[in-house]
Length: 119
Image 1 (cartoon, rainbow, N blue to C red):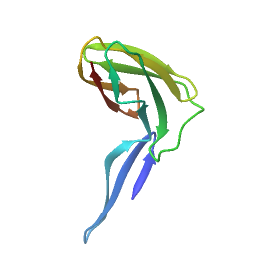
Image 2: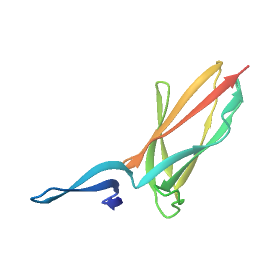
Image 3: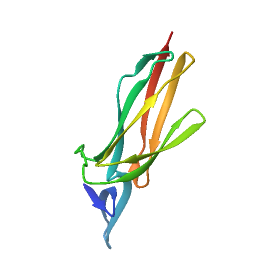
């Protein structure tokens, strides 16, 4: 059984012994998660618009919340302000390769997205 307590979703298990019943809670996920949406391929020196959205752990879009999130691409980091549960940023690269983009925010599951840059 899953149970949400203070922004965290736990997997709850009851273990019965002859003496007592123990309730075991293990972290399942946060109650909120970030998702990155956009194309996963782009040409060099071409802007790629990516959108970060805030969802509940049950995949419902959250539109009534403001949140600060950090975007990390390679060794570069920038801050996004999610307004009404979303924000947009542009990715551009002068080199060919596969780039891992991660977005983190407090009390949210991290979003990870890969972009392949071609010539």
